[in-house]
Length: 171
Image 1 (cartoon, rainbow, N blue to C red):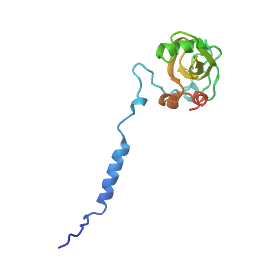
Image 2: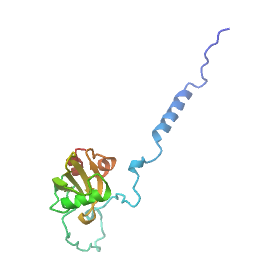
Image 3: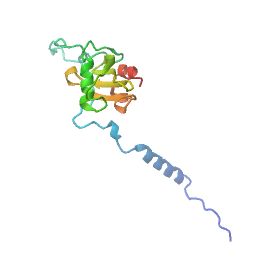
Image 4: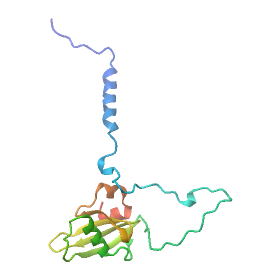
């Protein structure tokens, strides 16, 4: 006697199973490691401008002190950093955090630092090497190298750098 294929009693069952499997696959397993905050690093926090907050009529904000240094710079475009930081400070930050530059010898600042927000983009050259693109962030006296190399469009740069820096770096 030939075998006949049987039909499920509920035709919607295979569709429901496929939907559950698809939902499980799309739900993911959390934040990818490259997007996790680094230990000791700062996590970007949303900010609210005082003009966006409605204050009671009797409340007033204290006058703000004028900034002691330029910045943060506008974020949509890059602008000259006005010597804050200097090319030497960028070179020192790269040498401090990586071994990509020689510990001694001549390193030339091909493109001086340009700024957007509190981030900087610079191009350096060392003898016998390709130009080195560098992205740093922070105050000139405490620069943190974000990335350096020939391909600097890392996850951190693409997700957190100001638009001006991403454009200058070609990300």
